[in-house]
Length: 267
Image (cartoon, rainbow, N blue to C red):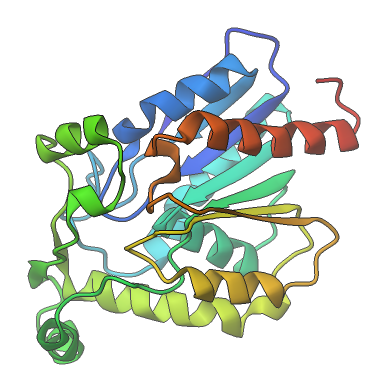
């Protein structure tokens, strides 16, 4: 994990969880935006992604590996003795929700950016069918996920960078895929275990990777004291990489700022 401390008087900590196929280095812009507003940032690479060494790239033995890893990041955030916000993008949103359904976390708010609760883009039907048997026989067998980089964002600069990124994943193991299916299935089944934590859910209206209606239904079934839903009509999956990202960040930061004011911080 890495920590980026703000140069200003700090009033909060953002723990960020990246999405499927990617890694922390793709969040440089967002990290600096949070720092400029007076937040420390903590983030790492998830097992099997980026520079993480605990699993081969594109593979995990169990979804619990993600939860165990992110728990360390959250525990590290407590050392600052400041309000902590958890921000999960894509698969990171799925991880955050599964954590909150399973354990008590002291956080001031949860931000979900295009959470992966169901795939809109899925592997081929053949790969899907074969993955069930291969998961038992050869769980590390890998196949192409085949999600085009230019379908994740409309930001051409980001697309060109990602095309040259040597650690951007394009092959996934059958175990990773099956573990994702199980985790996504559990999200609505364990809604009753979701804590009363302030929530901001944001999605892109043109998301080509995940089924946004699934997250919207999950959101509507919640019973929280504070919950906000925002859809950005023109945006693809990666909200914080889209051409509208300055506006999206301002909207997100207003959520954290209002939460801090509500709990007595002068920001």
